Length: 103
View 1 (cartoon, rainbow, N blue to C red):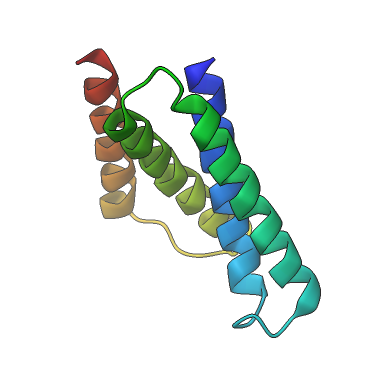
View 2: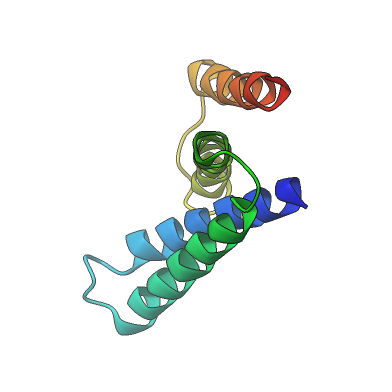
């Protein structure tokens, strides 16, 4: 259940970030509302995931997965560039999450 909750929390935070970019500095009503809704959902899911888990592990896993999903959203939906260096960074983040979960 921990994995599902942290993945969903990270996805909510990343989608919230997408809407943050679309809100044009909080000047667009609909994207601003969606941004806050996804951030609240992400925080709620992360809170539930923390039950029975160490805060540091939960927080780092969610942040790492959020970084990977934000990278994916940027590349696929916002047409932001990708490079070998960025892909290497994503691989290192994923490796770090795996190491952290094994410890």
